[in-house]
Amino acid sequence: MDEYAIPSTEARNNFSQLVACAMWGDARIVLCRYNFEMAAIVGVGDLHWLRMRDREMQTPGAALKEVPPPTRYQLLLDKYLRGIDVAPEGRGDKDFQRLAQEIGDLLIKGEDPRVILAKA
Image (cartoon, rainbow, N blue to C red; front, top):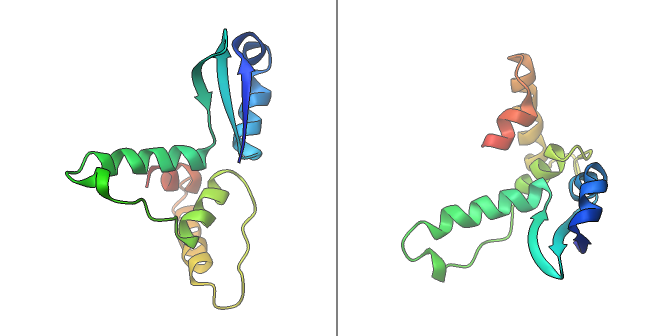
């Protein structure tokens, strides 16, 4: 994961390119003003991780727990939500089959899988 510090004026002039870098390039963009970090543009994977971390911090004793690494299914879902092609690792890839089944079911219902799965 690459992290880039960008002056706020440059960010304003290149906003769409910075969002694309965070979304497609797994980059974290830190917006700075006078060498002070003001905000960040992060990809969907980081956003999911932050939300998961927030939920865990709201439960008593959660600060002492270690955050488990994401499962293969979570990694596949993250790639799918970012528009990256996902493929099975073999014939018996249950995580890929689960994701493909969920996407297929949502498409049959006429729903947008990226919207529904991002909320889950």
